[in-house]
Length: 76
Image 1: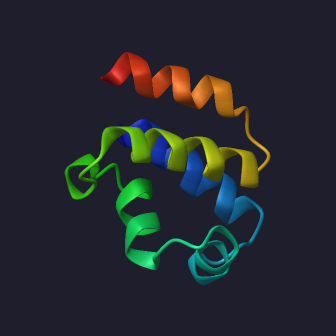
Image 2 (image 1 turned 120 degrees about the vertical axis):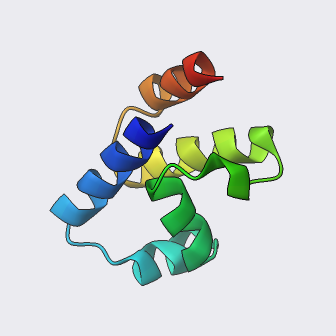
């Protein structure tokens, strides 16, 4: 899970997008983004929500969302 978070964080930083900007655009809290980027899966109560959050965040960053969702499924 940590690797997925690192990929998302790296992509966001490479695009020079702030966490606050992501929070506003995706309508999620800054804390959720920080938890995802740090690989803190325990902070999410619902695995299905987390999977869709990974998908939406990857799409937002222009990453291959299917690859990241597949990687998450393998992690589970």
